[in-house]
Image 1 (cartoon, rainbow, N blue to C red):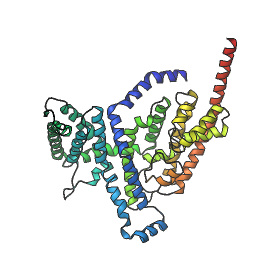
Image 2 (cartoon, rainbow, N blue to C red):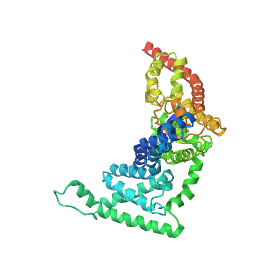
Image 3 (cartoon, helix red, strand yellow):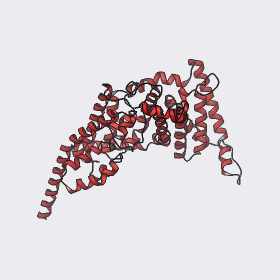
Image 4 (cartoon, helix red, strand yellow):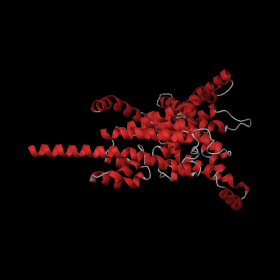
Length: 432
């Protein structure tokens, strides 16, 4: 175990730390985080519109008439329908700010570039097909490339300099004029080339060649296991695995959730929507109490822990753990860099991924059709993400019970190891 820990500390942690701090990945993560409120509200709007209880549907119809679902539809138009546009603006702004470049101008030109690359409908409107989650891949790449080009041009000599005394907003606007013009010409020319080459758009080309296979792979059990394993391995070494892997999770799994929500909105049963593995799947069934399913760890502490330290940490961590905030137990127990807790912390989430995937594949539990805040407590989240199914709650209870049982022997082993350590220290002090 010590050799493994030494190897990881020497080779794995430095690389993971650099990846976690890489400015482009941070910008992608922050861009998605910025729009998370819209995603959550949009998914709830669809959930309410299609809540599978006839009494509720009849009540809303009687109270508000035939058009009562228009409100939720309008909210969807302003959230999921333009998801890629929002992400482009958010990523570009955050990346530009990391370079101390004008973030507003960068986000504007990135958004304009994305619109150039996006197909239009017959009446020259933007197609919701590509402004929503399906256009995320092109949106992320566009935001990163255009912002980098804008940064280079913005800091070059080929900009318009305004005299002193001119308002700051005007100075920034004119300084960005030439870089924006150059970028628009480049992007428009690229779009002409793609159209001539494929008689389509970059969106369609990327979706067929890259995004569709990647999403299909992301919906598989092996991919979900890899994501779960890496997330917890990073956390064990004190690295924020959720943030480091965030760009991957958001880019792959949000589009899958959006397609589930669209199918559900069209009347498809939550059991029959297309995708199993989504972000709410991981949040609701694997990360219960936070990474490591630490709500189960806290339950195990209350059941079997004898040491005052463990029980105190359990009491202090329980209120936050109920809302999936687990830093108190991660660093207070600790789990981070605690060799005894490495095996359960990394393997239990993998086991829960397998049990949850199996339950959905077998049709025992509906697939996820709503996004809920990551702080939503288990039981409530299991009910909401499945569109109001009790079976979602049952799966969460099963996973919690299983994880608690698996944590118990390691709690006992950790306490025994701590007792031996204290005895050795006391013996050494006695000799001294």
